[in-house]
Image (cartoon, rainbow, N blue to C red; front, side):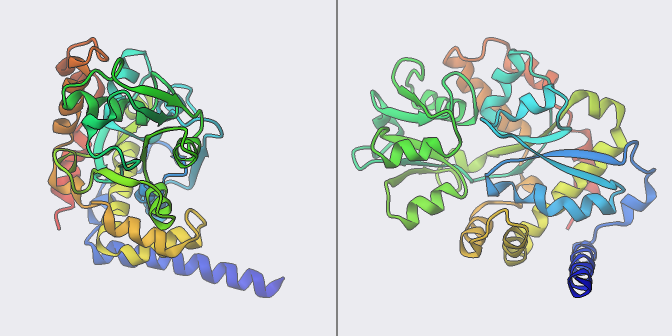
Length: 340
């Protein structure tokens, strides 16, 4: 028992030392020390099976260095409508997909976008008959839920972009679970599905289906964020210092994923987020984690909002929704502070 305690203490020390060393390597830490402490010592983030959200997980030690003594990762057992966790006050910070951002706002779910986090994690897998998005017309497409959820609105935006009507031209097949979408596709009960890590890697390993759209490579999707960092409006209002510190920790995590994908993949494996190191490494190398420094997340939101507005799936003026549901001041400050 004593030996196990020593090993555990050594492992914790090395983890902290690694985080501190990474902070020094990437030139972080000076601005944080000059700020007041966070208004709250507790931060709640969301954990889901998508390992492309690695920056959130890698950020754990950075969050502690930022003054959060209690870091909690909230797991959603059923379907993962992440904004629901914010609305129900079960989480403070989450990651959301830009296309589902506006329908959620219109339905009364409260969240505010703070920054883009990465690009290029989604891949549209289809059978051999489907060679383009237009080929989805009349086909069965597996999503988690009809009328809600990440994949439904992301695919709806894709379909609307090529001039199709997502509500009339697609046979949506609800799977009701994260893994159920891919299972329906594998079983031949759906002709296509939008997969994200580690699902694309698993499908490729089994040589099932073909990639029709890779958002890391194919325009216009490769030019935009696939995921945004969002928070509870109440948390942001009551805890502006904590919000900035939490965002800084996550963006540091993104920089680690971009600068040292091997380290990030080892972290995922050791912490059991993705035990298969080769899959974790493929994701870390394939997803654009440096995008938060390069692109404007508001452009991404406007692009998808216009597509869904044209399709009648977003009723409100997109510009008003963007003004209502975004707060870029923390990102703008951090971009100045964290220049490479």
